Image 1 (cartoon, helix red, strand yellow):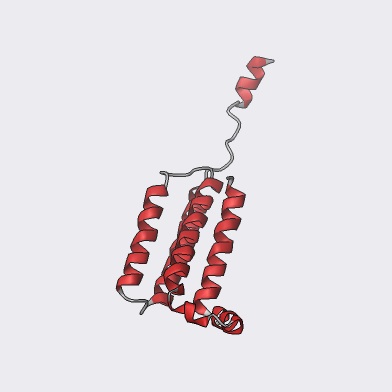
Image 2: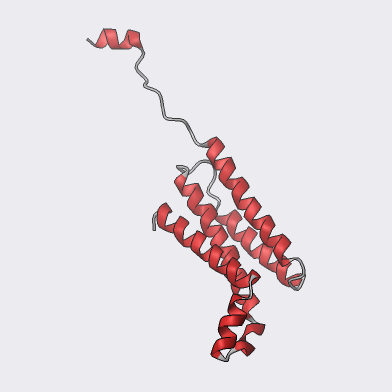
Length: 134
């Protein structure tokens, strides 16, 4: 999968996870369908989807930057698992704050990659070298 598809997939998953976690969208939809009793466990599924999607976004940004710096796969996995463990351990008390911190971390990583992205390589031929070639 290339970086464009990964970026789209990650952003879509993050948005869907955030909308379903932080709005009563699923409560209304499931209520109309008569299956709102299933919503007791939904946070245990949506938060991992949202944080994993943020990890996919961060990795896609790394690929898009031309692979600047070390490969972040291992760090992203630890970050996603660590955030989920913290969230579950705190029993979703600070879910919005932790989620906002994760979004800020991904944005900061994107800024870091943007700043470190190498500039276009200048021509290695100097004017004096070009004169000798002709």
